[in-house]
Image (cartoon, rainbow, N blue to C red; front, side, top):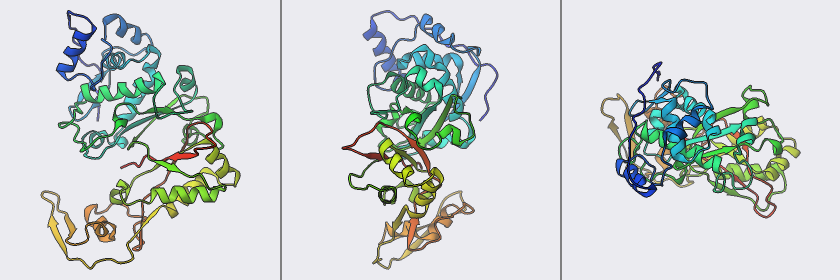
Length: 369
């Protein structure tokens, strides 16, 4: 996915009427996410552009499925519409570049039927400077930077990328996380190295990470007082039948609260050991009694593959090693060799969010497709 050096200038509209009339016009054109927008005036966009030394018409990225050119100016316009402050622009520019790295596979994320969306994670000094929340209610309401940065990315994916519900975006049911999904890591309370340090960056460097996730899945544990007990609960929560990772593999993102993280680290677990434990134990067990079923091989047009369908046991056949190999020939299948269970985790990504909650100690696991 390549970007050209210079894209078209943004179109300028002169609209009469008050704020409500302008919003009706934007809604009618399909330029919003369903919520009212801040009209992107020339002066406001110019103020945003003061926070970057890049040229307004420079193409930062090309966004699928429309293959729209996300110029610096267009990114600033959508940031204004989302309600951002001008100083948020560098984070949004960096996030757009991360989304269009080929490894992220934005084409599939935009068009899939699965309720998946980009999660923006911000580490380093800039998260504190602009007020991105990594404490209480980090995934919820109440913090302008979290909500508007996440919303700006969604508006760009719609307005520039063409990810519109029912056309470019084919999500069957969608997720509220598609409105805004941006957090900071709670680095101060982290007993291990933060995410960006783990990946080779200096602790004082500001880093934006994008991960394709479902909305958060809560894991409650009011009883465990050891690291091993907490990890067993987490592994059990990951190893559930509805996980998209059973079908195609994935990289779960585990977000721990400070108390659970401190308990696990205090019992001697490193971050790597936490991941290794979960890769080994987050499994979904086959049913003990499996109805013998007749299977039918169905050709997949144009692919050269054959899908095996189970006539009487529509759940258990997913866990058969042959199905995985039939659907993704040549794909690494490490973790699928155990015919009594299916591992639903690939290498786990650990983060720390939230604030101490002595009465409600929870973790969150967005399962990644």
